[in-house]
Length: 123
Image (cartoon, rainbow, N blue to C red; front, side, top):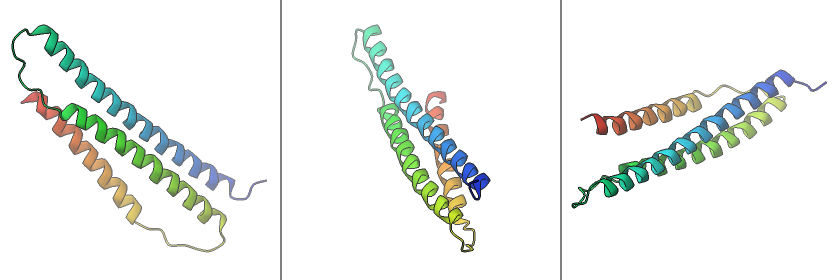
């Protein structure tokens, strides 16, 4: 029997959830960047005159989301390793609120980024 199996399994499930989230961000960033390229292609093919300049925000937004996904993947891997060592150790440790706060700030910034990107098309 593996000691503290339920804790280790919960840690692994959390890690896999973070990996899924980071992969979704990478895929969404790639889609956003490719969609911007598709919009530019259709704009050029539909208009024979000079095309008004299209903002490169879609490309930049896609790249930012891909980089953010990669950063989350690296940070979650580090967190998984540290938490696994903490579970296996016999010493008592005090829970840190810092990681929860950092995660909340990252997701709030991501939500603001998406809202600002969408509002560009609405107004």
